[in-house]
Structure formats: structure tokens, C-alpha cells
Length: 349
Image (cartoon, rainbow, N blue to C red):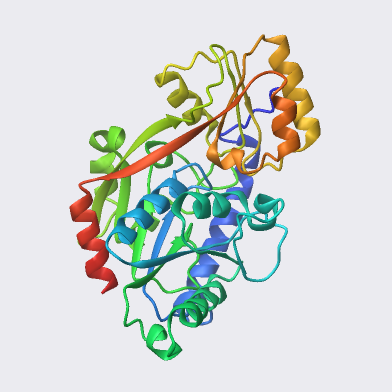
């Protein structure tokens, strides 16, 4: 049952690329004419986004940024679309809610669990930000106007915000991978925008192991006043190991990166199963995975944090027939944290 995600270019969709490009041009033209509104929140907004439709590693970078700012006493919250959620309107993520990942989206739940900050979801991120600011005022200030004036160190992180131009931002941080630079636009490829869109970025974030190869290409696309940061990514496995011969599964945009990092960590995978990004797991999926695992004599399972938040007790019990479910977390940190923090604080003040 290998529901593999194909990230190769989809040749049959090439005729649709000009239509997609025209749509981008119309959007940008309407915004330049002032017909598409950009609204501004009271607190500063740091947007963390990418050119690609997924898999650049935005969520771990958001968490790393939250941790940096929190350590310096900033009140941080995260604004997210909550892709694929069943909820409506603006909601604050409740990680204790039944079926939280389905209600709020898998990535917002993962951020809320890992970062321990308020995460607000809503298709309209401006409305989510208004709700976040008002909630902070009501919870932390007798005089709510003081909180709304941003007398304190308060900041929003806008998750996956590079294309969400309806919300003004203080700093635009964009993740770029080597794969992005050689990709093409949707629907034939996986780019939401052409690489020249990096002219809008204030900061471009590269993976440490790719920086030497791609920095020159990236800088030619950036503004002269923009900067480049690097991130270091380390795989960490939960204490309950998956045995000597685990089977890995995931529902992320770039499963190949996950498989490679597991193998680099010394995991001897007997099989790999990839579902589509943000796939909502069912008991039928669990039954098929157990059958597959038994056939290949797997001793347990390996999956990502993003996937783990979607597995309920019944699913885990069924998978437990084969062995433990080990969660592989991606710990991301900035190379040169002091410089990164200095830039963030200077912008937010």
C-alpha cells in the first residue's frame, strides 16, 4: 500500500501554468491599484513563509523563532490558516480538544504543543490577529488599551504568510531550498510564485548544508538590503524506539527528506509509506499499515510529529499490535542565534 507522493513535475499540466501565472499577475496588479486591501495589526508581525507549496520546513522554523523571542521576554502568538481544519471562523487552538488536529489543523496543533504559545487559526489572518490582541488585553491588562498600544514586548508570528498579502508585516522571512530553485510553478511544479518573488523578502533562510551551494544564486534574486540566515536541522527520536527494523510513514509534502534523515540517523527502514500532505488518517489506513508491516516483518513504526498529532488512542493501539510508534521530531536552530535575535528585536521594536 504505497500511496507515494509524486513531487516530480507533472508534464500534462504544463498548459495550465500560463493561466496560473496570469492569475498571479492579476492579483499583483489589483494590489498595486489599491483594489486589494492590506490591513495592519497593532503588534508587529513577523511572517515566515516559502515559495513552495510545502515541505520547506516552515513549522520548525516558526517554533525556533518562538523559542528565541520567548527567552527574551516577548509575548508571542502564532497566526495560522489551519489548513484542512473542520472548524470555522477564528479559533484559538486547544490541544486538549477531542480530535484537535482535525478541528484546528495538524501544524497549528504541533506548534501549540511544542512552543507552548497561543496559536490562532482562521482563513482571514487579520481577524485572527485582532482576536489574539484582544484576548491578550483581556487576560493580561486591567487597562486593555495599554496592551493594544503594544507597550509590552508583543509580536505575532504569521505562519506560512509570504503569499498572504492582505496582512501587513514588519519582517518577511522566506525559506528557500535547493529544490525550490530548480522547480517550476504550480500546477506543473510546486512553486506558488516564481523565484523572482524573493525581491519582497527581508530575510531568506537557507538550510545549513545547502548554503554554500545556493547562496550565490539566491542573493542574485534578493534585494541588496535583505539578509541571509541559516538553520541547522537535527532529527530527534522519542524514547520509545520502533525496534531494529521499523516501517516509516508520513503525510508531509517532502517525504524523501524524512526518509533520508531517518537513514542518516541510523534507522534501518524496512518500508516507507507516504500519504498526501495533511492527509487525515482513518482506521482503514491503520489496518492497511499493520498488514504491510507484518508482511515486511517490521518491528514498529516511525513517523513525524506532524503525523503523530493526528493519531488517536484507537489508532495507536492498533499499530501497537506490530510494535511501538516512535515519533521523529525535527529540532531546528538558527546558526548565529545572537545575530538573528538582534535583527528580530530591532525590527519589532
